[in-house]
Image 1 (spheres, rainbow, N blue to C red):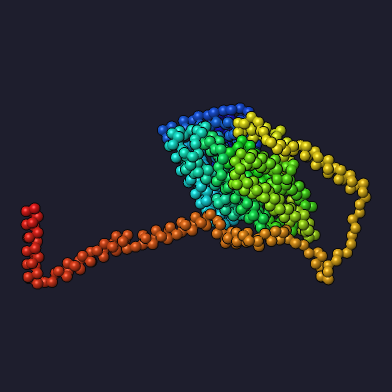
Image 2: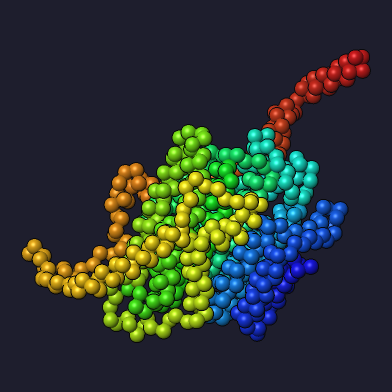
Length: 627
């Protein structure tokens, strides 16, 4: 019954943490997360199935089973819950600490129910609960003047996609005549509506374009550690888990061009938006959206290679994106802001954070030998494999978009590393910046950075062999362009060592000369260009200038579309309802007065008129009786 512990313990103690004001929420949550992680590892090596007859007349039988896919997803949720909780010591104001840790534990428990449950009705119920927990997390930890608007926007966007998910799930249950999640192997062509609705539900959790706009607004206002947990880890794990279930178990998906296009557009749109951001939180959130596109592209390619690459990229993304958000939190704690237009030069004061952020930046940009390159390389291979067999123009566009997206991602993080860590800083900030890196902050970031390195260099030996292939029930990975990660790493190390030796033996001395300024003022030689100005020219190029203008005016925001449509419908309904015909009193009054005025005109007071009406009435009655 270990499978019940991974759900019951965080669920019960999460509720207790919410009400016990005097309990140190951090330590209680940390103990629960450590216990849950140990149990999740145990479940990976022991398969269990639990059936609880809870309201059987409503088919609400709680059936839990930890197959390979579910077991590894639970390990991932447990690991990132432990990482974020460990990092979150003194992250919030004391009066909100209980709410914060309670919400994390409850979110963790509900996510595990969705992952482990084989009952579609139970999944349906807790899918909605997970959306509400995201709402409450944002609602209670953002600033008071922003909390309602941001949380409401999140709830509305997720509510629309969750409604599609609910409708698709109901249609699936009635169509398949079962409420158990099993290998149904339905044909997508014959069940297009059900497939589309269930996929929209998963895409909404992932934050794919156009359901993405709640992510940057939320990340901008909430603590970066929370963004790392919700945006970087949990929602991605749950969303990809369900997308894999839909495309691999419920339906038989060979290739879905529309989904591939959605993934490609998500990569491009989000990375272009990230390139022009001045706020580090918003930049990271847009890159979180962009990286989802790679997962969608891989899974929707319909090849074994693509699915492996998509799921592997999900695992890698949760590692380096969580690390980036935690690094962002360290920057915010140290300087008080995350504005990239203000040079910070924190590499001397936050050396560990600098190294970890650099590792994560290289990983997300797809630079070998780190993990982001390994998963992207497999996705590229799947697209090339699909291109060889189909000769599809869509596949060519998707492949170019993926490659171009990686290049722009690297450009974005060159800007980030320069502005935050490698730029100049004033001497007055030295005392303010020192002693900011604590053990509880450095340790989880270090673990994530090490995993980014291991999952890159030993990609085929460790994560793919022991995580990804068992998750998907595949026996082996076969590609025609195998990336020799270890060999490349060894050669890279040899090159660095040789370079250092040559440098030391050359006895090279840097020549210092006077700067020729072409007659300009002497003070200009100390001038620096803000990192946010690196790529301003892109913003001025057509059609990017038009797209950026529309984005700044919020005209590309799905929430504004939905809000505008609903406002128009509300105005129309209100205008119709306010018509006199729908007012019983006013409309009835007019009818009575109109009829009364007719009869009043007939009531002239003349005797011969009354006699005529009497005669006509007698005649009508006679005809009625005769007929």
